Amino acid sequence: MSHGGSSNSKTAAKLDFKKVLPIFVIVLVDLMGLTLILPLLPLYTTAFGANALTIGIIAAAFPTMQFLASPILGSLSDRFGRKPVLVISQIGTFIGFLMLGFANALPLLLLSRVIDGISGANIVTAQAAITDSTTDENRAQGLGLIGAAFGIGFVIGPAISGVALALTGNDYRVPAFMAAAFSFMSIMLTLFWFDETLSDENRAKQLKTKKAPLPTRIYRALTNPLLSILMILMFVQQLVFGGFEQLLPLFTLSRIGLDGAGNAVMFVFMGVIIVAVQGRYMGVLSRKFGEQNLIYGGLALLALGLIMASLAPQIPVNWYEREALIASFEGTAALGSESVAQEINIPLPENGNNGWLGLAWVYLAMIPASIGGTIISPSINSLLTRRTDPAEAGSVLGVSSSLYSAANAITPLIGGVIFQFLGVSAPFMIGGIILLIMLAVATQTLPNSDKPKLDLSAQELAVISGDDRDFS
Image 1 (cartoon, rainbow, N blue to C red):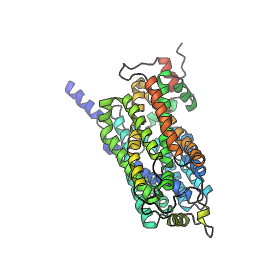
Image 2: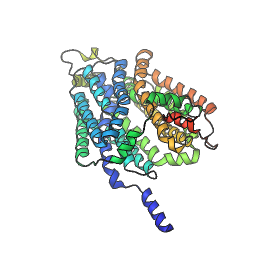
Image 3: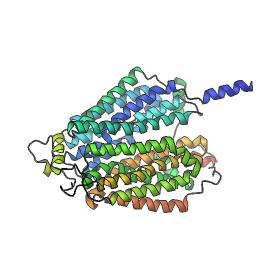
């Protein structure tokens, strides 16, 4: 009997790849569209005469709408199932990419990102489908496939963009149409390959589960002494790292004259580092140093990378020609008879003094920045789960994810203002200094992770998760 029980346990713990494969492929194809345009969006917006603040507003539109709409679409998927919500959100993404490609003015660019953001529950719904299709023993492995899809997408997507831009003379509309094609492919895969994962029984069970509103849960988590410092660290590090990712194309354009194809290659370089750290070294580093030390190391490395980048010398790349770069923007924006030189509101390097030092310096800074930005978030989430009762880990991670999304919505606005009014290097230098301050605060206030887990009381757990039962 004992042998049979052990066999059943191993079977339950084994992930059914055949069951989750459609979800993984759909997410990967969907992310290919996102990663095709994400590194290039600031430059595409620049072609329409936007300044840094306007670029920040357009960049913030997607995460802001996603932050507001994802909980609603998530609730709808609990009520009507994963498949219909996934298809509807993918159609919205497809429309958004088409609008992006056909846009001939800044308002249409903004509208395309708003539409994509409102329908941007693709990943959330896919995560729910993975949860439906896994057990407690293999759920982490299943959800890890979503992270793997992100890693693969952020290597392949920018690479495809770089090739497309190189072949079309930096026509930024081409990656947008390619992203729409990938989005259409994901719709077809969902319609004809994906089977509904939410059973009628689980649907009824989830509809009965009531949680406090998200702002209430965030407030309760932040006012809990045990969790507050980790939640604040999550928000601040993504505020800084998200701003770094959003502003990097503008920074390299302005500091070293790097065009869309060059920026795409740089994002591929960063993607390879991120995939290597997450896929090969994250577990090893966590076991050797512990999550808390990885948080400290990640903050220090990210701060170092940002400060290094801010000090990069203004030496344009060897192939840089100011007039040719301006002409490529003119072709994308189709500004007619107006002189695009009067329309570009991002400072560009002058011709001359070209060389490799500026490019090499930025690439060198990308190494600690990419490693640091990659290890902080999973280390914080891992430490959060260690400090929380397993029954409430999902709710606590949900609050952490919400703060992460909120930071992504805010950071382009703050970064755009700093870039425009304080200078090209200011966002990175200020971000690095903030991270060093947070590192000092964390080392003084973060409880020692080597100590036994500090269990929260039943009432404290209920407060964070939004359970309003009376414990008196």
